[in-house]
Image 1 (cartoon, helix red, strand yellow):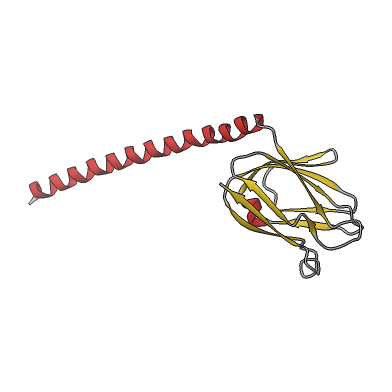
Image 2 (cartoon, one colour):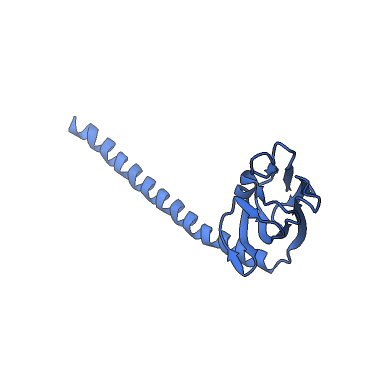
Length: 163
């Protein structure tokens, strides 16, 4: 009986070793690929000129709307979205799902530059901001001003990312 269990035990040990080696190999490949992908994203794309697009949050007549209210981007291209608020009211550019589908290089407002994930921007009257990003995930995303009553008054839009 002992001779029957020894081959099974030896076989299990061999399988475990192969599993550990395979797991280690795959983990190292993932670790090596991640910096390479990040370098490709930040290096090559930063050399690419950004396509400039301007959107106004409100207007001089204080209408609650985005102008334009439909934005379209292409995945893998670098964009500079210039946000302006010509109205006398503060507004939010709220598009969380869109923000989750992009890589943000920076958001700049005046002499302040913010890096990392951004989900919402607040623009006070006469304010401007610049959002530099690369869309990664295709889809259609909602845009709205999350100030109470603004969405309900029609301050909404749509952002599309195409492949």
